[in-house]
Amino acid sequence: MTKPDAKHNKFSKPVTSGKDSILTDTFGRKHNYLRISLTERCNLRCTYCMPAEGIQLSPKEHIMTYEEIYTIAKEFVNLGVTKIRLTGGEPLVRKDAALIIEKLASLPVALTLTTNGVIVDKFIDHFKKCGIRTLNVSLDSLDTKKNTDITRRNYFEKVYQNIMLLVNEGFTVKVNCVLMKGFNDNEIIDFINFSKKLPLHIRFIEFMPFDGNRWNMDKMVSLQEVLSEVQANFKKEEIIKLEDAPNDTTKSYKIKGYQGTFAIISSVTNPFCDGCNRIRLTANGQIKNCLFSSKESDLLTSLRAGKSITAIVQKAIQTKHKIRNGMDTLDKFKQIDEHNNRSMITIGG
Ligand code: SAM
Ligand code: SF4
Image (tube, rainbow, N blue to C red):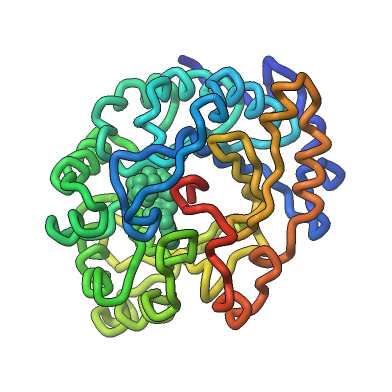
């Protein structure tokens, strides 16, 4: 399948991607990156993502159909979105995941996915056909037992093999690892060394609070702590700071001579809100203007009623706070009532 060129969008021209686009907020941030959650379901049960007792799933009829996902995505592309990430839950467990990927691949966007990697092997040819070249795969430990503990399922070998498969098939693989004190903080160097002979991009994520994940600040491993560990294990001249793009959520580094890189996503201690270009669409058709916003805007009900969704999108963008839904200091962030937000499994990261 050939990917349509953005300049020859067969659907319609972007309304505008300039300052006056409705996707530009009151702080001048242009939201050109849409993250779509395909499902609230998952084949893993990561402790940091969902409560032990599971979550209350939305009724099936409240979940967007593939046609609705495509219609909403197309509307966003017309408004100026140039990148779409599929997430979940686990996006690939949705029965029509392949169809959704194929439909969205026909839009003039960079299409990508965040996955736990368990069933990625079944999609390799489809990804290639649809022009997907980069994937984020979550893996929180290189130890089988620890991995089983954190995911409450036993798929470590499968995920590990699938990461190798993706690399061998020429995909760019970013490995997402949520660090937690006393659990996997002793694996920081192991993960970096995992990228010594493989072109993997390791991304350490600061543990964030969401409903039911028993967050507390003491469990979180900060950007500074990761860097201290790296500095204790590598010589100063071996640690190379890489340039970060304006919308990057990561602070990126490389160890001299290593094929891969590593980066830190520090939403808690060092928020990157200044360059935020993300809009999140949940599987039940709500948009969130910030990961930490409890307020949601319902697109699906309007879409089903045959009404335009543009005004709802515009309002959501215009009411976005400058920093983390108003929690502009670490002290305010520590006071967060995570029960006001969804569980991460129903947001999508
Ligand atoms: N199932 C897919 C996966 O695991 O990659 C996609 C959905 S998952 C919600 C997206 C990302 O969010 C994953 O990389 C996961 O590690 C991250 N995540 C989930 N809960 C988190 C938390 N409390 N703090 C930081 N990152 C989290
Ligand atoms: Fe599932 Fe991903 Fe959440 Fe783990 S992080 S429970 S794999 S959605």
